[in-house]
Image (cartoon, rainbow, N blue to C red; front, side, top):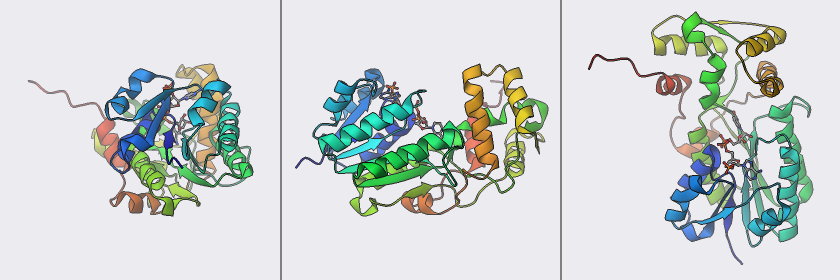
Length: 292
Ligand SMILES: NC(=O)c1ccc[n+]([C@@H]2O[C@H](COP(=O)([O-])OP(=O)(O)OC[C@H]3O[C@@H](n4cnc5c(N)ncnc54)[C@H](OP(=O)(O)O)[C@@H]3O)[C@@H](O)[C@H]2O)c1
């Protein structure tokens, strides 16, 4: 029996990072990289990984890609019809005899229906469970990488205006979560149970503002706004209309503590402290202007 591992989203940030790390743990000839953009998977071809171009909207291409795979790692897509795409991958995996299905969703608490940022992942998890395929659910914190976008123009105004999340939120870097996910994929002893990849403690927006103040050397404070005000700010900032419900849904899920599950799983898998908010903000901050 082949023990091939298919890594979807390999042309993207998370899946590409997972595959970069898996190459240190698993022989290249057991790995298959899937994406739509071949140019962004060139480094994997160079490393001896089979590269498969497939779009989940294409049933035949999806079937061809999954045939013969022992393990499928699914990175969620971001398309409006992603539930249909995910269901196609799950159904195809069942039909083609996949033995282990691994999915990177998001940390979540509560019931289905909190908006696409959470409910799509909850529904995908339910579809995986219903398929009967042995599976492993990886639940990611909010990407630290999106924090600069959430902070908006706080550096300019000194105010980080965002609907408060009273108990804080869980943030972790995409690169750290990709590395930890590679370890989960490579180690069958870690299969069969959920893994919440998160920071050891939740962080409040007031603490985010304090960290940002230290990074930019200028005071920034958090200011609570209602969801309606937040929506108006997004419109005023020129955020494209189709993105607004998603971003308000994200703010609401964060405010309600849905994306909050502090724990040591990520640190244990990495064998080190995950990247902190302050480290991430420092890396994202523009380089100081020098005189040479
Ligand atoms: N937890 C969080 O805070 C957070 C933040 C942002 C996103 N996310 C979720 O995590 C996912 C991965 O994040 P990322 O940063 O790696 O995103 P990304 O860099 O945009 O990568 C998305 C990957 O999905 C692939 N893909 C998209 N549509 C596809 C289709 N129809 N068929 C096959 N492959 C398809 C893309 O392939 P091509 O590039 O070849 O088109 C790409 O490899 C996102 O899609 C989103 O659902 C989570």
